[in-house]
Image (cartoon, rainbow, N blue to C red; front, side):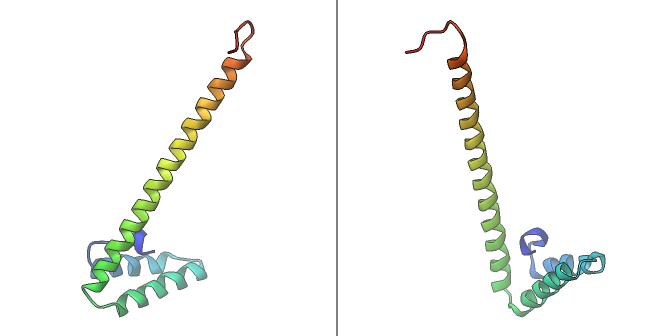
Length: 95
């Protein structure tokens, strides 16, 4: 929740989270957001600002690593398919 709604300040982050509460119909999701609000309200500044920044950075790194991993996997699969296709071509000499 913090990553999705995090702004640069504690107040802006809390405002964003509080703004979505009336729109949430799922009880469990609403409880998660309300619990997140309570926990953030309990963290004093500037610790809260550092926590928000660290949380955002963690998820950005995780996302970027996931993108890099998926790209590497896709490249490897593409290379394997090309190699298999070349090996299946008739009349082609194999080393």
